[in-house]
Image 1 (cartoon, rainbow, N blue to C red):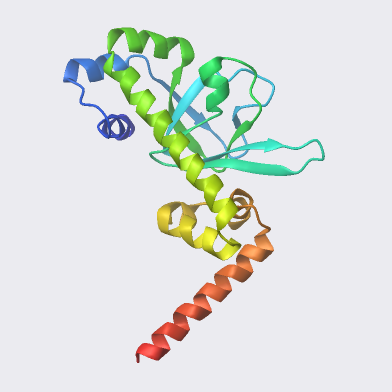
Image 2: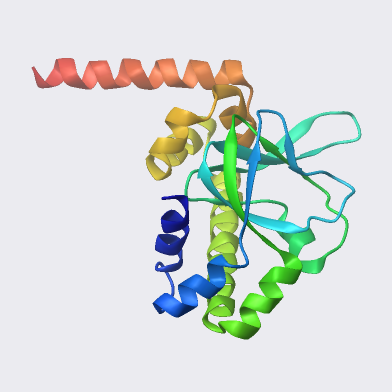
Amino acid sequence: MSHQLLLDNFKNFINLTQDEEELVLEHITERRFKRGDFLNSEGEVNRFTNFITKGSARVYYIEPNGHEHIVQLGISKWWIGDFPSFITQTKASMFTEALETTEVLSFSHDQLQLVYEAVPKMERFFRLLIQNAYGAFHRRVLQSLSLDAEQRYVAFRNAYPEMDLQISQKHIASYLGMSPEFLSTIKRRIVEKERERKRQKT
């Protein structure tokens, strides 16, 4: 089942033959992490790119003063990791941490190069995946500049409803650039607005 999730993900951008699918899966490493385990750590070269089949994870960096900033959140069917470190094979500037028991299907950097040679379509897949990720990051930057805190949360909830339910409030708050307490206030305000709209309709 977990392999099928990955194959279905490929279909978002490319179509593989059965022989190509089998060849690609030969280069996959199955990995399992407990809550709090690191898929990669800051200061070390990130050797893997990871497709989540179960659980959730976050990518974050730590300022010199100890303050954390979450750059990416991921749940099942998401790719996760310090991508700049993986692509360039240089030391990572971020941590990737499992937020619960998490299972991933991983390509090592070396294995992925072999996949590219054997199945050129896969290079197109990862190129489009990275382009989409860059586009999403760009939208997030614009939202942080143009939207207030409540609008940012609503945009997040609308775009990623499953993630909103699965990821803890403190991590969503960090991802959106606010405190958990302020996010809790925003949620209460949204609930009150929704109740008021329902009352007006009755």
